[in-house]
Image (tube, rainbow, N blue to C red; front, side):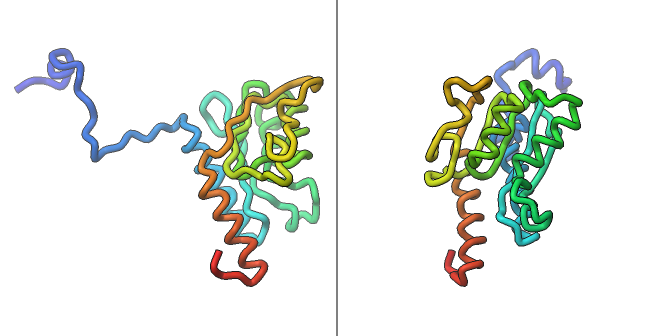
Amino acid sequence: MFTTMEIILRDETLEPPEEDPIIDLQSDAYFMGQALRQALKAYEAEEVPIGAVVVKGGRIIARASNLVETLKDATAHAEMLAITQAENAIGDWRLNECDLYVTKEPCPMCAGALVNSRVRRVIFGCHDPRGGAAGGSINILQMVGLSHRCEITGGVMGEESGQLLKTFFGERRGNTES
């Protein structure tokens, strides 16, 4: 009988069995899944289902969902609320070591706040070709002349994010086939 260490030393090519997938807690899909959980909270509260999380050093430091209707505040987008939480969590308005995951491409207001708070990277789910400000209709996140430019990764779990929005608006319009 061999000990575990003897087996590892003897055969360094051991791989985990295929039936036990390894969960990468640092992946974009994992953090976008957490943002989607926030979007579901918004959906359940009858808010537009958009969620966001801010990550620093591989840890979530802020979570938020849209609260526009609840707070009667047009600026209560998930990204804006998550930025404020993150600033409070680290004690600084500069979020240059932070990444923001959001289920839908940020609007111009949110993109401006992301640039001003110096978020390092913005990862979003579904694209918004009509109103998105991360390349959809305009790209504020990388606009030349601004004090900061964010890295952008779009389309992470975009299908899931988009379907949640389609379902939400379909229900509001009385279309249950969404």
